[in-house]
View 1 (cartoon, one colour):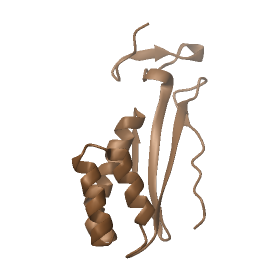
View 2 (tube, rainbow, N blue to C red; view 1 turned 180 degrees about the vertical axis):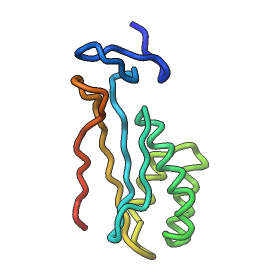
View 3 (cartoon, one colour; view 1 turned 90 degrees about the horizontal axis):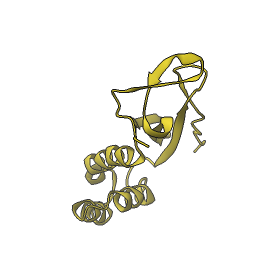
View 4 (cartoon, rainbow, N blue to C red; view 1 turned 60 degrees about the vertical axis):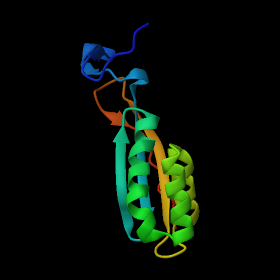
Length: 125
């Protein structure tokens, strides 16, 4: 079995072509705050999605967190542990300024069309 590249097409029900991503799934992450979404990313893999969120965290840590918390985030990033950096950021987000939280989910390719669909749970603060 061979995985399709993003430029190849795979057939879906009814023979209509669609983007042939492996497992027909897109990953979504949204950084939320009391005043709305602050950052959103969509990626073809969970790892790529995490990389985008880690980039947001790297840009925001020094402004949003206390210096000791921001330092830990940057230490995790320097060690190549994006997941730990993201977890540390959201563990402390709100200790200095507005609280932020991360919502993650995935979208599936609808077998009846070329649309991506799914539920994105946006919790109330």
